[in-house]
Length: 239
Image 1 (tube, rainbow, N blue to C red):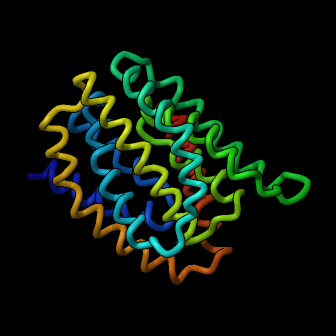
Image 2 (cartoon, rainbow, N blue to C red; image 1 turned 120 degrees about the horizontal axis):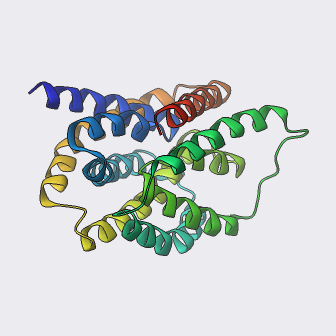
């Protein structure tokens, strides 16, 4: 009972945070799942829960979605998420997680030290972004903080950013789950645990949506950068 209470509270906080910043939920929930079920089970369970949480964020922000971004992301992301899902069963993960942590901290520094504002890049670039980060997501379970700067650089903010990033992530998670299932990494018990977290994830998405609608854009960006720093330090320290 204590374990489930911790899981549900963690899932609610994680989903609310992700609904405000577009990421960070996995960084909060993954350590709790690892301590309860181990890394090999934690990542598939997290993927099931995130699929529900991201799906609810898509619905709550459905009027602001950037469909072209999602289509290009899926073109590159689907095959690489499938490949990463197959490699997950035997890959060493700690060194890659620390590399991602260093990258997150560098992104925040770069955003403040760049000589001039970054220009928006072509929507077709999201094919490459989807390919790279879908593969990494299948391997380490959480790359939302790493993807966030690219969606922001394209010009998406608030509901458009949250919903578009969530829909791209849904495509990625569905592909990962197929690969996990085919390699026997995803078990029936994992699916049931992930589904049990689903209602709490939806509630967190609703609470986060109400919060983000009231946030000024400048405050919204500050919250995102603070979460990037926290996630980067967490990845570096714990691997």
